[in-house]
Structure formats: structure tokens, C-alpha cells
Image 1 (cartoon, rainbow, N blue to C red):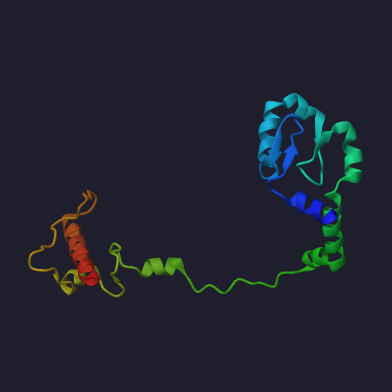
Image 2: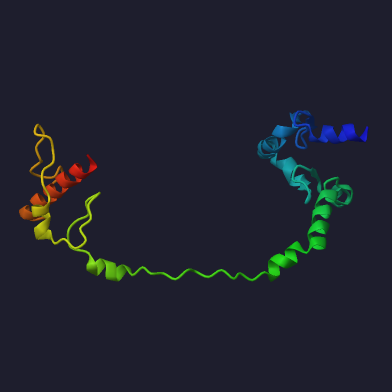
Length: 181
């Protein structure tokens, strides 16, 4: 019989009576949501009820809270967990553990890398290490099919760039198209 009661407690479809309205019978799986909704609907009853420290689903009149705490069925679960943690020394080990992790040495120097980079803009798929801006145009060639021509300007208007820079950028775009094909 005790085994049947244990399964009944765990059954998500069992009906539980609402502490705010005695005419409400809610399935156990929906009970927490109902409590929030019903608490807002019945604020006067909510002021009179206290929440059990072992299970937030247990709402009892404030006068009976100390009696409920002494007899609460969920109190045993909490005590077991506390005893298990104390006997295993888990918390003490966590408190006394000192981290020995150290950050790996960093070989990056962003300022040096920035000074080494040329002033050419970034183009996806292109590396410009060791190539100056004057040799970029001479190195690149048009590898587009004969029916496709290289655009003479970028698809956007860049007013701060000089015209010779815009044509160089166009050449770089066509070179990146060649590399992806």
C-alpha cells in the first residue's frame, strides 16, 4: 500500500486542491502555473498563506506554518541531501580547492601587427602580406569569362576615397572573384 501511495505522489495526472480556491482541482503537472495565476486572482487569501521552506507548492495558513514545517514530507529529502553532502565532505573540498590553472602565454601583439599591415583595405580571400599597393594592380589579372566584364566602380559610392583608390579596389574585387572560381 505504501508503494502505491509513493507512485500516486509522483503521478503528474493526479488532482490537487488549490489553496486559494477550494473548488479548484488541478493536475499536478499544471499546479505551479495555477498557483501563480490564482495568487494574482485572490490577493486577500495570498496574504494569509505562508510558503513552506521545503516545497514552494505547500501553501499553509501562517498560523500553522511551524506545525507544517515539523511534519512536512519534503523535509526528509532536504535533510538527506544535507547529510549526504556533509558526510562526503563535498562542500569542504570545494571550499578548500585552489585553482592551479594559469593562462597560456600570449604571442599576439596587436600593435605590431597593425604597424606591419599595409594601408590596403581588406578583401576576402586575398592576403596582402609583403605586397605594396602599387604592385597589387600589376599582379592581378582578369580571369573572368569573356562575356563578363570587370566593374569600373564599386557598387557603393565612397566619397572619401580618391578615384585611383576606387579603381584599385575594383581590381581587388575582381581578383577575389577569380580566386573563388
